[in-house]
Amino acid sequence: QVQLVESGGELVQAGDSLRLSCAASVSERPFRSYDMGWFRQAPGKEREFVATESGGRRRYADFVKGRFIISRDNTKNSMYLIMNSLKPEDTAVYYCAAKYGGSGWGAWGQGTQVTVSS
Image (cartoon, rainbow, N blue to C red; front, side, top):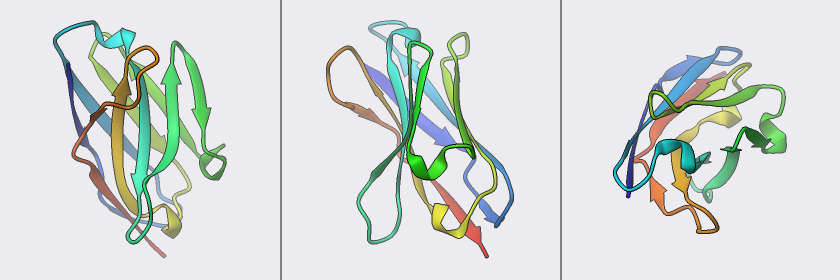
């Protein structure tokens, strides 16, 4: 079982940068064994994929390529999302998620609000 807590969201202006953090508490297996991801949900929209990190491989949604960077520190049981050149359309609640093996994204944090003003 893994529990996730996001932090770092705030109100910023367009063009600014932010770093989101996701702290994991694990009990059954080491943090490094989990695939980790960031997702977001804007008002009135469905939750969407942002980025994932699995065994050192990183994937990004097209709308964040070149602007966002996902990383993790297995020694700290933590994952990060560096967001550069933020746009108003990046405004959303950002969630971190974890999965193990071939299972689905079974663990979610409570989310952190990112608001980008124009």
